[in-house]
Length: 233
Image 1 (cartoon, rainbow, N blue to C red):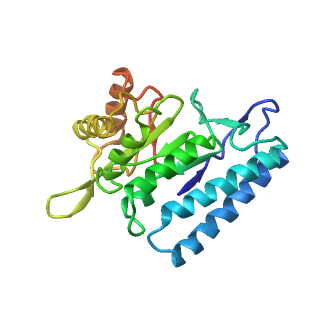
Image 2 (cartoon, one colour; image 1 turned 45 degrees about the vertical axis):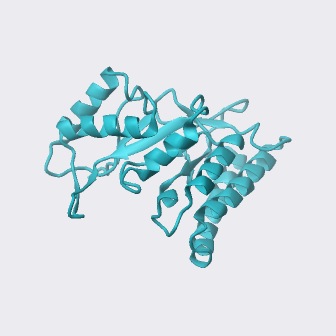
């Protein structure tokens, strides 16, 4: 799954997508290709990685053409993620489909797609501990061996699955700390660049969950700070 980063552009022009015609054109291109992927996936079951590789090529080619620069993936603008210091490519690669969410997936093929995306200049890779219940993060860890530098790794916690298959959410401080350590171990890395609470646990005050995430920041495991999947009431 390809993920657009609708945030501030950085580079020679340093203009925002709202005022930059090229950025607006890119956003329209991403939207159109996202819809096209959904339609293609209905017809090409079990080959999500191949579809993603094709769309990565189209998007990177299109973005470079929009910027009027030669080459592929070498002149992509970067955007600042929120109020952090993290710089990301305008397009990120979501890895959920690589763990059988939308049908069969092949690990080696998926790793090839991740490497292809990195080669094209995409540096934001988005996973979650519940994608394949650990499989996705392990897959990402394999893909990152020897290629960790410059990659912004995002993953999530909050959704759980019991031995009997029952799914739930958990935002308790103890779970937050355990989940982070488990994700780091699966991916074989020391730091998670972007760590989300995937689902808010209504049983736990949000202050307690955020407090645990603050501890992760203090421990240096999530240096970018707290990221939540929240909606303002």
